[in-house]
Length: 238
Length: 169
Image 1 (cartoon, rainbow over the protein chains, first blue to last red):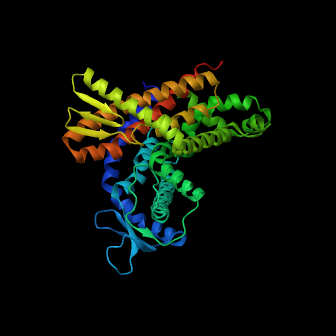
Image 2: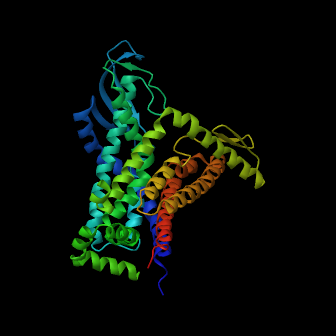
C-alpha cells in the first residue's frame, strides 16, 4: 500500500535533497564560473564596471571604471576594484538543489525533462540577476560611501562619481535582501508549483474550487475543458 | 469588484507577492530593525543559552552574542534569525484563499515551528564553531538554510492539507 501523499512527498524530497546537495556542493563554483561572462556582459552595459574576472580563490574580482580620489595606496591614478566572495556566489545558486529535490518528489509533473530544463534556465537567469544586484550594491556602497546592510564594512576608498539617489540605493538594498535571504526560500517552492500542475492541483484545487464556486462564469469555462478535470480527479485519488 | 474579477489563483500570487515585498521592505526599515528584529534576535540567543544550560551545558547570551563556556562565541546576525523564512511562510499562508482563523492559526503555528528548527540551528552552529570553522561555514551558509527552506515547504503543505479537512463535503 502506498503511504499518504504528504509523507511520501516529504520523504522523497529529503531523500533527493541529500545527493543533489552534494552534487551542487561540487558544482557550485563551476556554476559561478560558467555564468560569469553573462553577468559581466550585463553589468558592463548597466553600471560603471569594466570587467568581472576570476580572483584565483573561486570568487570574482570586479574592476570598476571609478577613479579613486581618497584612500589611494600610491600617488598614481587608481581605479577602484573589489572582490566578490565565493560564499556569496555559492549562495546565489543555493536554490538549485532545493528546487530539483522538490521537482523529483511525487507528485511529479508529466514530461519532467523539459520542465527540469525550463527550471534550469530560470535558475540561471535568477543567478545572473542576483549577481548583478550584488555588484550594483557594491558599486553603490563605493559611490555613496554608505552601508547596504548594518554589518557591511565601508570601503576604505572614496571615488569620483555622482551618488545614487536614495530610491536607487533602497532598491539595491531590497534587491540584495531578496537575492541573498529570500530567494533560497521562496524560489524553489514557487517554481516547483509553477512547473508542476499536479502538485498545484493537490495543494490548491480545493481552495480554488471554493473560489470558483463564487464565480460561475469562470467555473463554467473550466468545466468545459477536459484536461484540468482529469488532473483534478487523479490528484484526488492520490 | 476587483476581488470577483481576478481568478483566485492569480489573486493568490498577487497577494503573496505584495505581502513578500512589503515584508522585505519592512525588514529594511530602521524602526522595525531596532524595535522588532534586534530584540527578537536577543530573545533567541537568550532562549538558546537557557536551553543549553537546561541540557547541562554552560552558555551565556549578551544581546546578539551567544557564548559557550567562554570559549566559543557566535553572533546571531540578520539572516540567522529565520525572520526571512518566517515572513515568506506567513506571506504564503496569509495570501491563501482560506478563512482568516485558519490562516492565523497556520501563521502562528508555522512560524513557531520554523523558529524551533532555527533554535536547533543556532545551538548546533555554536557547538560547530568550537569544533571546526570549516564545517561551521558549510552548515551556516548552506545546509541549515536548505533544511529551513524544506521545513517551510513541509509546514505549508501540512497546513494546506489540514485546512482542507474543514471543507464541507
